[in-house]
Image (cartoon, one colour):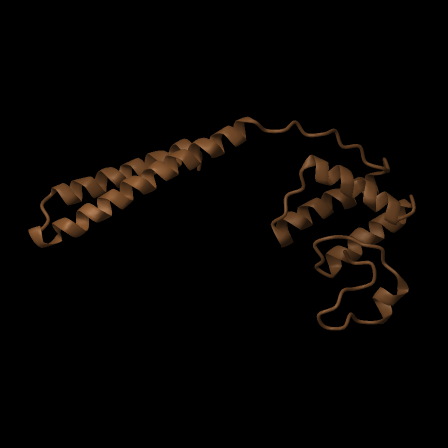
Length: 155
């Protein structure tokens, strides 16, 4: 839903509320409904300011950086795409360009420039439900993490 659609639905709800109030309320509720209407008007003003701020932020979007994979093979390209889709599906985390750029550089460093190791790290993280990848050691495979602690190299 865009801000304009949101604002229109708020305006429609406001019109319905005004029609209800102006339809004739008992005089015993008049004071309470005036207080409510005053608070409602303040809420609408705040909502309008917030919508304007959100629209301005959306208009001032940042240009994404170019992403170049550290390895050109189809195996790594597929593994990386699977990783990004996994993050969305499992953790509701969308990878934007600067995060992707930094993550690829970090993965290359962790794997010491070895593509097969990088793919293994990605698969290990996905298989175990982790929201980030890390250096996998034999200790990761042999010893379970103590409850409440972190695995070797997890950040």
